[in-house]
Image 1 (cartoon, one colour):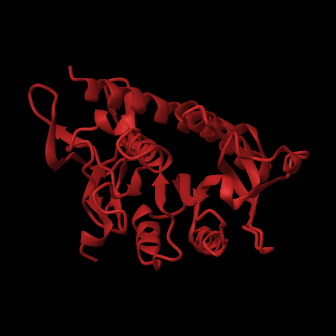
Image 2 (image 1 turned 120 degrees about the vertical axis):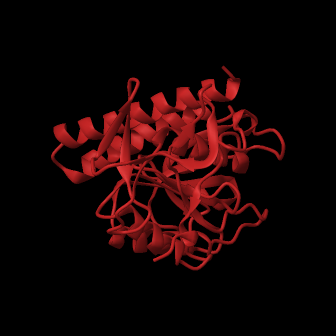
Length: 279
């Protein structure tokens, strides 16, 4: 078994655990705000474990020296050494834009209104002016979608570049910013495999009308590439999360040193571009 396959299997387990935590919070926590914060903290733990030691994860508002400010940010990845502690004396932290590398918006369930909300937050973050030309990236991470994944994907794919997040990830059933084209989105279905268990390039597993497919000990969600389409495909949240993590490291580490990408085969990077799907 290749190292790449071991890494993919590990991230399948991580994605399953993350989704299980979200489902447990949903059942146990009645207040939407508390449930959302619990999901933010789950993702924060994962991101913190992934990041190099010079980074830290907080929550608050990004500001610049001209009096501009971002909206409230769920997760802020900042330079641990450069963040002035005088701005961190309360639970509401203020982050000078010069110290921030990425903002992550976390959604429990992404609906059409929240797509627009994220677009506004992206636009406001990009209005900040940095004295050292360090401009934070914006990532959207959603655990699930309301309604059709294809409909939400089309809404986000149509956004102008000024309003589109640098990285978009919908864990369930599986949507990610295309690794081969950062200006478009891609569905993340499960590959068919050959007799040796290796992925077959651009050949996707289909299934009948059901919500889940069990393969081994893993439960995979089922979805469509178009609203109301007859064809249903098995999606792969584990690979979706792996591609999201690799993209974060690409942005946050010096060029060529993002180790996780070295464990991804070209086939593991394949997605189905949203813009290529016939209406």
